[in-house]
Length: 190
Image (cartoon, rainbow, N blue to C red; front, top):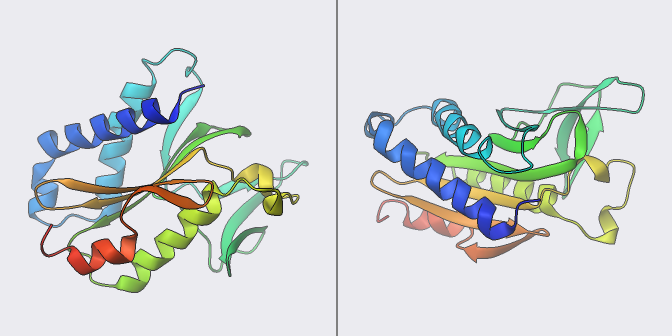
C-alpha cells in the first residue's frame, strides 16, 4: 500500500504535469470537470507505474457504490455524513477518486477541485465537508456504509492561475494546508 508521502508526491507530480501541458485551461478559466479529467489522466499514468497498484484507478465524477446484492447506490451528503440511497436527488460526485473499482477496501485518494475563478464560497465549504466525511476513519463511522468511504487521503486542490494550492485531509481533519474557505478569501492574491 502506498504511504501518505507517496500519495502526495503522485498528486503533486500529476498537477505539475497539468500546469505544463494544460496551462491554457487555467488561462481560459476552464470547467472544473475538464481540469479534473486531465489531472486524472496524468495521475493514472503515474499510479500504473507503482508496484502493487495494477488494479488502482483514477476516476472522475464517481458517485456510485453497490450494496451486497450488487444494486447500485448513490452517495448523498446529509448533514455531516454521507448516506447511500437509490435516489438521485442531491447525489455527491467527488471530482477525482483513486481506488480499486468494486472493492471499497482500497479507497486511497479523494480529490475536490476548485479554480481560483470559482466565485461561490458555499461550494468551497461543501467540498470541505465532503473531504472531512470521506476521510473520516473513527469508530463513529462504523456503520453499514463506512466501508464505502475511509479514503486514506483527501485533497482540496485550488487551481491558481500560476500554481496550485492544497489542503490535505486525513481522518476528517486538515493535516497540511489551509481550509478551503481561507483559500477562497485569499484566492485573488494566490
